[in-house]
Length: 440
Image (cartoon, rainbow, N blue to C red):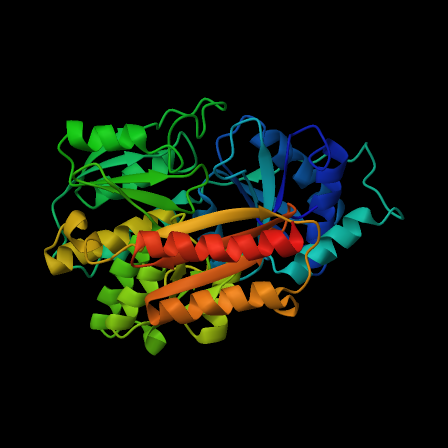
């Protein structure tokens, strides 16, 4: 049932059919604590959200628990409220950046972080257990509460100690999603001049040609309105993509670089280290190394980022997609807190976003997908292993070689980064040719 970010699907069809959703609510209530748990629910703006929430409430109530509905709220707001200690866990009804016909359910643990693989496995085991069911006659409804105020105050507080808060005109694209109210309100509380885009959700227009996956409209708006920065959120608000005053996109690697250097210079970066995924550009690693900051790599996924942060004692980690985690602020990604953290750097350094991102050199990258018949250990294939070692030796510390199998397709992915595009292409072709001959 559970994928990399909760349960996803089409409402009305398994695993998001009414019976399975109800059983998931009951299973989550059992797994999150003793009888009588209180679970927070939040949702994005999809029209199916309240229907899913109602069926979750039936399941939670069947286990003598209470489902408190905070209504439409960003995922990080739900995480903040759960982490406050008032709830035994949470559920967020959202499919993030997916189109509106999709939806999903994310389970939050008691600390506000996303459910661990063990907790998800326990919930799934209970859902699949055919020895019990929720009777159709059982009726329940979520208990509605307006809890947004605490999160809005928390978000605004990120800049509370910023003595040099900049005066900026900011364009913000809320993707007609969960940030549609929260982001403009927080930015206006902080006295920014806000140009709000895509803040009129109708249940079906979430992420439609807007938001972090479609920043083109924001790029135009930043230039047309003379903004110094633009923010583009995804549907549930846990990540952000920025746009500088020239209309150029600034991704998660650049944000991680900007914030890591600033925090390190201020003595606010534990261990002088950050976490990035295997997909982050090698330029991030080389640039931060020069600034005295180590980069710990982890597999793709925000949960993997958080786990690696805990393992290495890091307070900052993130992905190219704009999903950054500032653990001192929240145990999960928050697009709004990420944007405000970058704005803090702009204010404290007196440099604009375009200037700050220029310090990061993005290295040329070549990615080749090689179809394969089987997926043996690459080190056990001498020709492939020799080609990989040769590429690594040629690049040294000025590049990176990543060769891995796709988790979903019969493909070997060969990715190589380095200073010279032509040399990178030649090395990638050599490794891919060896792989094709042995495995193709």
